[in-house]
Image (cartoon, rainbow, N blue to C red; front, side, top):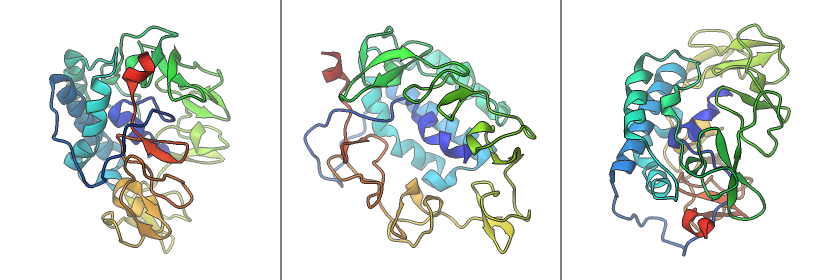
Amino acid sequence: MRWLWLVVALAGCGRCKHDAPPPPVAKKQKAPAVTTPAVQACLDRIRAVTEYTDRCEGGKAWWGTVERAVEQLRGACEIISVAPGASYDRKAIDECVAALPKHACGAPLPASCGVHGSLKLGERCAFAEQCGTGAFCKLGETLCGVCAPLARVFEDCQDAACEEGLNCAGSKCIKPGAEGATCLTDFECGRMMYCATTCQRLRGEGQPCTGRECAPDFVCESAVCKKRPPPGPPGAPCQSGLDCLDFACVGGSCRELASVGESCDPEKDPPCAPSFVCFRGKCTLPDAHACAR
């Protein structure tokens, strides 16, 4: 489904694999909120992108409300904002916030919504936000990576991130097809589309369906797209992640997202909370300063 881009886009995070763990902390324990100018800029960006996504693609199934999305991703903002080389440009984010309410649905996000740092190609990193324009943090088998160029059209993306506006399909970066374009997989189509030999728009309320044709805010019942019920809290029954807050459906039941030090086996555990990543079966907290040493 083409709306899965939201989790990465919200925090501006191009890092999706490994990081170094700190000492474990209790799951229910919360540190006081830290709202520096950089953190506030990050949160403002998250709010603007979430509102854009709700307007164009649905997305409330992920967080419930815009404010909940902001609070869920606050920890990621606090961590990334102090990473060496990372920067949240206040002027650019103000331009992003102003542009998104009237930005065309399905189009790549405005350039001002991108988050770029000052690290050069080859320098050690933990997050994409540390790397300069046109680069991402390429990770290997260790907990840290190096800034590397984003992959262009038809370049390999098996171990790389594609440039903005491109999709990774069949291990190659491609420009997603418009409605009616020939396709083999959903990844070959633009946002809010699915592949049925050709790229087709996801369907809305009252339109016929057989399974996966409905937009995220709808569910296929009795061969018709119907409004999806509000996402359930931890403990509620579920059939898929879309039935739960935080997209965490495990074994037919909604779960809380896993915290630092907790298991993140996709077969039996919920995914890690936004501040953490799953590394070697455990949720871990990034340590960009350790990577820089």
